[in-house]
Amino acid sequence: MMLKRRPRPGAASPSPVSLAGWLFADLALLLFIVTVAVAADFPPDDSAGSEAAATPDAAASPTPEPTPTAEPGVESEPHVFYVDTDAAGIVAGDADAEAALTAALRDDFEALVAQGYKVGFALTFGGAEEPAFGGDIAEASNRVLAEGFPELFGTAPMRHFWTSSNKDGIDVGTLQVELYLLAV
Image 1 (tube, rainbow, N blue to C red):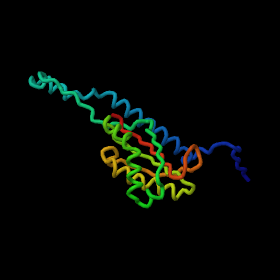
Image 2: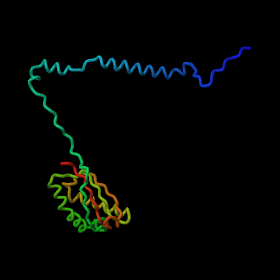
Image 3: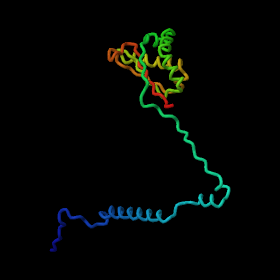
Image 4: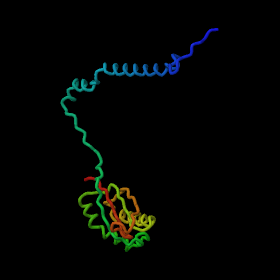
């Protein structure tokens, strides 16, 4: 009877399956090295430069520099305005309440328009004890402001939020308007 040797505990098996991962890693490394070596052997493509040198008209005229056409960015600090409103009138669409809101902000907003500013986006916070009513105040105010000052707001996104009244001088109906203006 012949005894078989038992493999030592922790010894790796030299089977082909166990070596497949190492073989794959070695082949991937070899492929990377060959790709880098081949790419380094090619000279940079200057065929456009040789054609320009061969053509006398192209060498005589200077190449125009491209002009940047990036849109202006939004200023990082908002212009913040606080105004006390007739909250119930604004939400109900009362013309007198809407006129009072636009009149309260007219001088400030017209000064921004005179300086060439446009709104990038606006955040409006309606002061109220209940979130739903505060959001309604801010939403209705956004509509009034966009209609009252189209040259300032244009198609800028306007978001409405609630802020708790009786905090930091915010009363029910106090409107906090934060305008993030496009840099001029």
